[in-house]
Image (cartoon, rainbow, N blue to C red; front, side, top):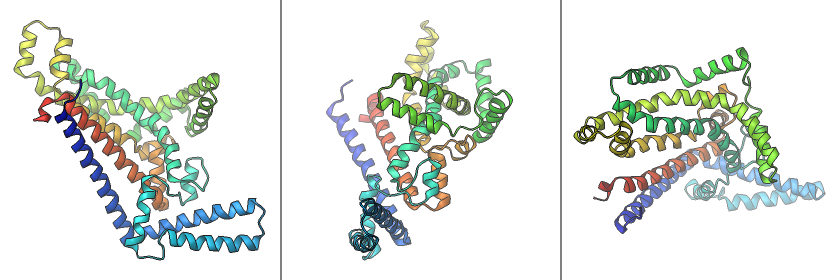
Length: 368
């Protein structure tokens, strides 16, 4: 459906507002970093990484040790001036923002790089690019499966309020909400891995299989891609099933709760009185009306899943975004923490912008 000028103006205004929100978050982060001295730690780490790379290049070129030392000191002085380490914090902090926006900061701890199976020197953008697909495979994909089940089924459950199915879903949601996801993860590792022996007991080898798939995709090796996908499926099916099982109950209950008010409306009763089928009533008179609020918590939930689940990923020994967050926090890697906060905020902003577009398309009342 084409958008009129008013709709486009609304979307543009929302986009500008959300962009300003991201800018404000970055500015506040920069001020906090500068006032506390963290920016100095970050910039010194950048200088150290670049000097080390410079020295390695000179050594590879077989430059004498004395000359390497002299040139490295000169290069370090230049970098100190470039990054503003010889200036007040409120001046030099500005130097961090452009690098943060493009994720050009460096990982400063070997443990952070090691948890991803990588080595330093390593940029935070590269680290996130490695960790993010792993979390998408385990967490986000499972959330998508749960959402695809709950969106059509939730309104139907509300339509059948008081039935055995409705009571069963309420009980299922209560049970899954009562048990922490990480506890279900531990139980699944014991049950499927140790007791039934139909799944791995350690999931870290998926790193190698994801890498193999990427290499096969780059070289257009179809047999290699199929083999790698089979191994990825073997290592990921239990985590996906566990996360889907744990999140499905809450999503079903949430969609049902939104739809209950709608199924009691007069126009739904009139549609039923006209003899329309249950499926048509749910699709045309219930699902379309609740699309806005349902899409809100599903899209924002998907955006939140990008950050990963720290404890659950740790239980599966799954080196994704959650484990990366935890390792960066525990080691005090301020560069990595900054980058993760920035990426999380950026994903949320993008998700909100998508929602604003969908609201204008789905609900004409927004234009009023």
